[in-house]
Amino acid sequence: MVALAVALGGCAARPEAPTGIQDPFEADNRFAHAFNKDLDRAVLRPVSRTYVRVVPQEGQQMVSNFADNLALPGMVVNNLLQGDLSGAGRNSLRFLYNSTLGFGGLFDPSSEFGIEPEDTDFGETLHVWGVPEGNYVELFVLGPSTERDALGRVVDVFLDPLDYVLPRPERSYATGVYVLDRVGDRGRFGSTVDSVLYESADSYAQARIIYLQSRRFELGQTEEAAPGAEIDPFALDTEGF
Amino acid sequence: MPALHRRRFLTSLAGGLVAATALPRAVLALTEQGARQLIDGLVGEINRVIGSGKSEQAMYGDFERIFDRYADNSYIAAYAMGVDGRRATAAQKKAFSDAFSSYIARKYGKRFREFIGGRLEVKGVRKVKSWYEVSTTAYLRGEAPFEVTFQVSDRTGRDLFFNMFIEGVNLLLTERTEIGAMIDRNGGNIDAMIANLRNAG
Image 1 (cartoon, chains in turn red, cyan):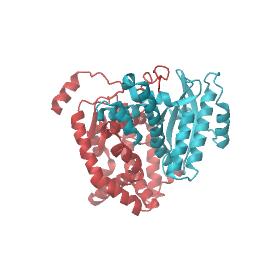
Image 2: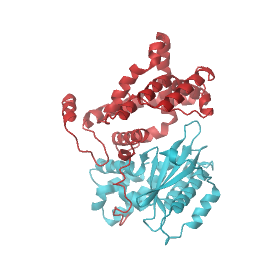
Image 3: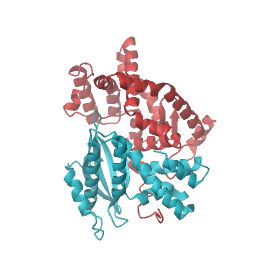
Image 4: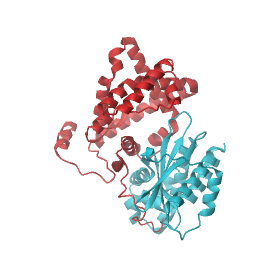
């Protein structure tokens, strides 16, 4: 069914919904969403609450710094593929300083020097190369995405230079730190995530519109993110409100 | 993009007072300065609340007063209801507007509460069609700074903000989705949706 829809989607240009959402796989996506919500309720949410309660703030910051630092080499590859030399330079400097002066990435002296990260991924590289966003998809475990970003995530696994350099046990520690950082994020932004997942009338629709808006904003696709033609304060009947 | 507006502006309690006394000049058209003054005032008030150390409940009350004074609530409510607004009675519209503005104050008050220990700074203003866009930066403890943008118009005869973007996430679009879902969940019943809304957020 999905394969058929993909095949059809490939050859027919689909008219965009007014809010710029293409979601022909909604039924499958909602199934993944329900699964992710169950997983969050049973595992991620309780674990993250304990994590932010038990681990001191400084410890959480170190985990976050360490995970961010390990992600830098992969980002440099993407910066280069996008022709973004200044981003590649900044991220390389960050990796150099934080790995040495920052004790293997536990600290973030680069930010104090004013060298801010240029976050990127292969999904953005595809965007820079002109690949369209594609349909909205919610992935199992990983959450909201688009066809382009989902493909980007797969490619990023193979693009990370550290994967080819690090020996076996270190590689799994790196994965562990990444997971721990995700747990920390879930804990720190707990009430925001809870409000989307558990307090909204339709958490699937909320997660979808929030993901698409923030991702398009991140990639600088401002026209899609803000359908300004639709939001005109003078073109709406507010009589009685 | 944010880099275009790098000028920094000091926001202070004084900024809030200036905007408050300058508000009732309804005859004047919306200007860049007016839009900036409004958001300077708004940001000053938000910063004062998040720096006050008040209880959660007291803060929501403060945020509701701030939204009443600075936001174009009837526009935001009408937008959020979308096409369903066309079949709503006058009484339903009124009840919806009331329930909706406290819901918005609670919901976004909670988000602003997370700004405790941080601050918002006004960065710049630009004209878009018939309204202005005022960009601000949120500085939160332990987080990379991010962008919060307000759209300001004088549609009602007063300068008021009618939309807010937190890192690109648009209040109007997000709330139209939410209200639409609430109406669907209640089988299209507007009164039931309004009753739901009173307990949401």
